[in-house]
View 1 (cartoon, helix red, strand yellow):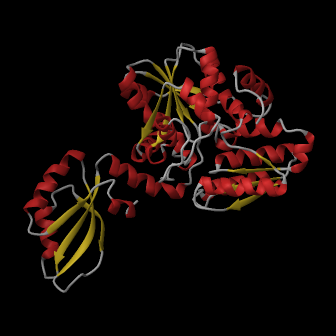
View 2 (tube, helix red, strand yellow):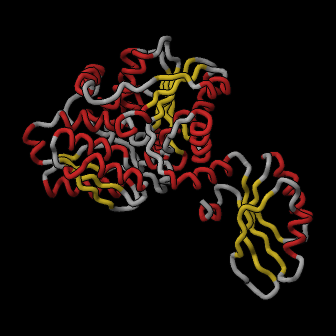
View 3 (cartoon, rainbow, N blue to C red):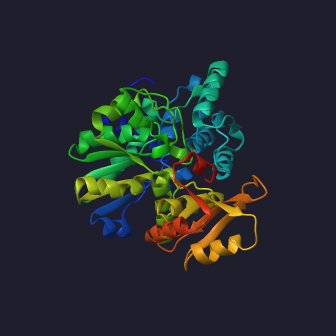
Length: 416
């Protein structure tokens, strides 16, 4: 972890990585540009080796180890993408490694770690969060002497990740007004900020982190890294409970703003990227472009670069992605409906409460609490978000007892 993160160390990392990593495209996104009235460019790290920028930091660190350190081997903790980068580096350089991942790591990422690492890397699944996997990996490092390859809070990692910004400044044909960077532990945005402040000091730097894992915003409010009491791990590539000790002061000094993005908005952007642009982004990969609406609203039109940080998304997760998106845009709603246990109760609900274009997408009796009534969980999908008001009025006029389950309520956590 020795050394200083500066433009020189990022330049040195770029030379080390040049024969290995891809120079990913910086391309204008017509959908977002037209929607927001700005020039929106996407830095396509989803097309990087291992489908993520993480290989930049991992390979830069592992390849800079001494011969003695390489003989000891390496160990890391990862939500998936960093582990793939470490596995790639281990196999490429002939170094033994162990990768610790939490149990919520998508199967697709786990399988790719083993594929990249081959017989040089052991995959260890432990804990339910990144922070638990990190604790296990640190203990393993202390026990065995293997070098811990930090995914974000090591100068060598941050320097490698900062090469993303170096490419942006070289590729863009005009001055960049704003760069939006996804934030997990803070390594990528630290490297990006250091490079931009040296080579494009007028560029506004905005971090985007998931609302359910807003650890950098918590750190900024607290005055230093602080562990979150609760963590939504859906945006697994950025769900870090406590940001890096080395990353935090750089973000505090160099980054203009860090915004929180609702997980539903991330899901909606994932679907738009896929259906409109043909881009497969994982949740963390869609963070920056999901935040673009808020950023442009705050700063006005200009040239905005959003880093699409990764494309390792398990297809089995898309049902959850669609569900969260529909809830976010106001097309899907859930209710607890208490039906009298008598003929015609359900028919009344269908004929008198629901209207044309309002479809039941979920129906499940919760329990029968007595002989007369039985509550049911009912999910309803609308054609337009504005149709909710008329549906609620009809529910209020109905003799049935109907309770809306609002997003964010404790009940709602059981649905997603």
